[in-house]
Amino acid sequence: MFKDWFPNVTEASVFKPITPARGLYQCKQSMPWPVWPRDMTFTATGMFDHQRGGGVLSCIKSADVGSKYFGANVPDTADGHVRIDIKRGYHYFQRISDTQTRYITIFNSDPQLSYTPTWLMNFMMTKICYQMLVLIQEKSKDVPNNEFGKRMIEKRELYDKYRSKMKAAWKLADEAKALKEANESN
Image (cartoon, rainbow, N blue to C red):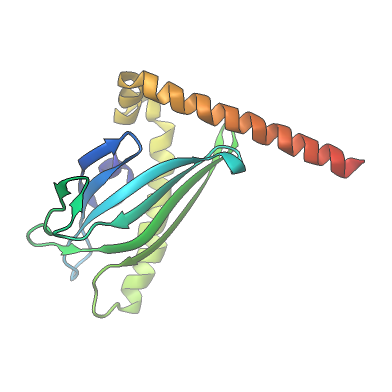
């Protein structure tokens, strides 16, 4: 899914799944000339944020080449690629309403560039990051018809469990908000 939902991603795979919300992942990304393509091998853990109304947080960090992740050897950098070092990364999705979601992403990454020209930094911040948000928005509208929708049908029990947890958290958040508003009006 990552390959289809994020810009310039040419390959993405689960290298070592641990749970449905945790694993070791690999990703390759093309870059504008004259930059070499990049690869990333990282761990990701997803979790629910029950305190803020059922948000979903994904925590990401690079895995070091030569290290082990739950018994699996972390692979070398792909031929012709440069490894991006993700110091820490976060994707946070928070329900605003039934049709709106707040998406926050924060990353501290080293793309392994000895010099980053201003034009490239501007390109990355204004085009790549923006395009990522546009792609996520467009792809999310088509979930019933795309691979993600098919996956949700195939793993219905898992996704029903997630939906149940999220709906319970949303209900608690709505009740807390209503109580707070009632107290403030008195």
